[in-house]
Length: 427
Image (tube, rainbow, N blue to C red; front, side):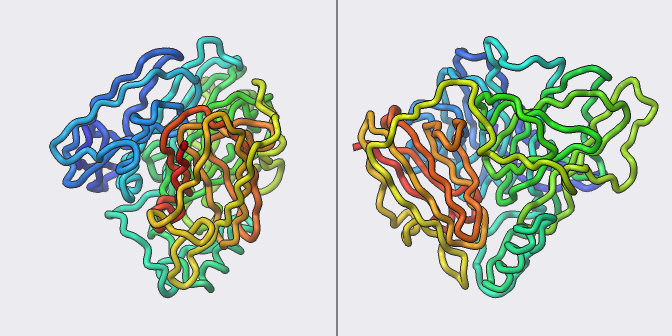
C-alpha cells in the first residue's frame, strides 16, 4: 500500500510524508535468487505513482516508468509487478513519478545469492537519504536561492561555490539519514569481536552524493551495484544517487564507533549511525567523532575494482557521444542540448555492442542510470555511474540484449525532472 503517513525521524517530531506500508524507508523486500517476486501496489495517494525496480533486470513492462513502460497507477487503482529475481545483489525500489522519491517512496530489495561469493557472519542494510521536511518542488534555478554549497571535499566546495555563482539551487534539505533516522537518534548495528559484518550500503536519495566511512575500521568492498568484485580495502567511498556498495567490516576493534555519510556537493548535517560491539563496555561513540576515512586514507576509485565474473570485452559496434550540461541561470539540464521529453531517442538494435561516451560540462555530479541493462565501466559491471563535474568523462559499454524502451537518466531527480534523460529504444 502506498499512502500518506507520519514518520518520526528525530525524537518527538513527526513529519507528514508518503509511505510504503506505513514505513520509512519502505519495508525491505528480500527474496532468494531465482524466486518469483509478485508485488501488488494499491495507490492511496492523491496522485499517480509507479514502482521502479532499480538495478535488477526485469521485463520491460515491469520497469515502472510512467508513459514509457506502463500507464501510471491512478489514485484508488492497483497494479501487480511480477518478475523472476534472477540476478542476486543489493537493489532498490522507488517511485518513478515526478519528485516522489523526496516524499519518502524508497526501499531496499535484496536478492540473496544461492552461493555467496564472500564469507560473513551477519549483515545489515543501510539506506542513505537526504531529508526534506516538506513536499518537494521543482527548482527554478533563478537567483542564489537555498543553495547549500561547500562539502568536505575539494570538489564539493568548488561545486558549491561555482553553483552559487551560476545561480543554481539545491533542495532545502535539513540533514542526511541512515535508515530513516537523523543523528539525534541514530540506528545501532551490533557485532561481536572476530566477526565479519556485511553492510549493504544503498543511496536512493533525491539529490545527494555521499562519502561514507566508519570510525576505527576500514572497509573491504565486495560488490558494486549488486555485482561481485575482487575484495578491495578502502577507508571511504563515494556513493551517488542510485548506487549501491556491499562492504565487509572486520570487527577487530571493540567499542562503539560512528558510521557517517557526508554530502559531497552540499553543506548538510551528516548522517550518522553506530557500530556497537555487544561484548564491549562502551555503548556510545566518542562525541563529535569523525571517521578517519573522511580526513585521510584511501578513497575508493571505481577503476581500481575488478569484477569476479567474466565481462564482455568485445569492441563496440557503435559509439554514442553524450554531453551533459545545464543548471546555469535558469537553463534546463540537458543531454546533447535536448531536454526530455522533447529529446530524440537513442536508437539501437538487438545484439549490438554499444559504447556510450559521456562528458560532463556542468558544475554538478551526474549519477547516470541505465534501466534494463548492466554496463561495463572500467573493470566492473554496474547500472549507475558517477560522471564528475568540470569536464569529467566516463565511457560505458553494454550489449543490447533486452529489447524494449528503456530510460537512461541522471539519478538526481531534480536534474531528471528538468530534462536530463533519454529513451533508449530498440528498433
